[in-house]
Amino acid sequence: MNTIQELFARLKTEGRTAFIPFLPAGDPDLAFTGELLPKVSEAGADLIEIGFPFSDPIADGPVIQESYTRALAKRIKVDDIFAMLKSVECTAPRMAMASYSLIWKYGPERFIAAALAANVAGAVVPDLPVEEAESLSKLAAERDFALTLLVTPTTSPERAATIMKACTGFVYVVSVVGITGNQSAAIETIAALTTKLRNLSDKPLCLGFGINTPEQVNAFAPYADGIIVGSALVKKLTTPDAMAAIPTLVRELRAGLR
Image (cartoon, rainbow, N blue to C red):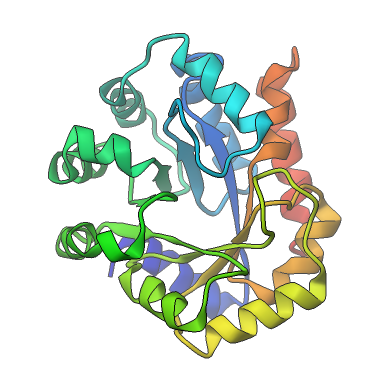
């Protein structure tokens, strides 16, 4: 059982839903990210998703795209991100959010080894089709590395079952059709979607996309094992008091789970 599976097993016994903030690495720079991670962990994150900047994001809205552009302007590399993460200690487990193009170019075995050495427990790979995921899923399982793929509201039950089988961590459930930061989905839609998925697998379901407020966190929490918030936090990176504002917002969003 990997660290992510252990987390969700523990939270299930406690009757709790995980709060999972997303933070891009390297915006405004890697030193800032390294200082911010422990603060976000202390503010109540159960798991932290760390974005590896990529020039052609698949589903990220303008807020995250602009953050990635700022980070890439610093010419940071995958090795730089891992070096930063290796130097930073925080209580919450950490996952990478990385395009398969980055993983493939870096080398899947090398990427997983570097991630584990940097105390990164798994990876969300948003653009990896399940039809091409077998080798990475097998490698992740062998290394006890949590691999997470995406299921959307338009995914057929048959394909969703295949995707969920390939996941060795949680299943990332996209709550809306569209990009990150979009309008939040209707409760009825989420209820129907998660019910369908729970009939296919008992793996943890984490909802993301379009969840930005404590009220939305509270509304969606009963249907999920984890709630992922990205754009609302990333917006704070451009404010003068970002180092304080982001942990404060994490506390406010986390309070929605109570």
